[in-house]
Image 1 (tube, rainbow, N blue to C red):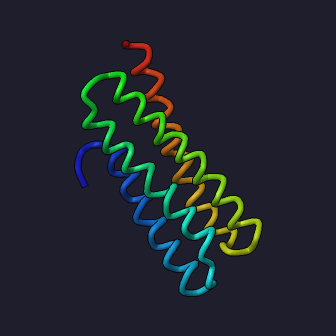
Image 2: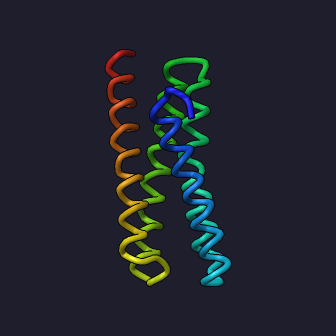
Length: 117
């Protein structure tokens, strides 16, 4: 792990989502929702990583905005998985707290970056 908090948090979250997806497939034989959570949950970090390598401030903000939207989508899929019984309340809380923290950080970075355009 490096010294960039948002990169570290989004990477760790992506690893959690890969493991969750693997568990949903192997233990619950759930293939559709597991693919959705895998895609959106790993996309948050991928887009954050792309933003860091952005060639302009606008590019940076655009990629972080995509990461923010993917994080919101991931939150949706987590709620679906909890409410359909695929994950427990405890599992949900662990993932939900992590994605909420990521959302707050992303929003803060986007807001301050827009103010400095």
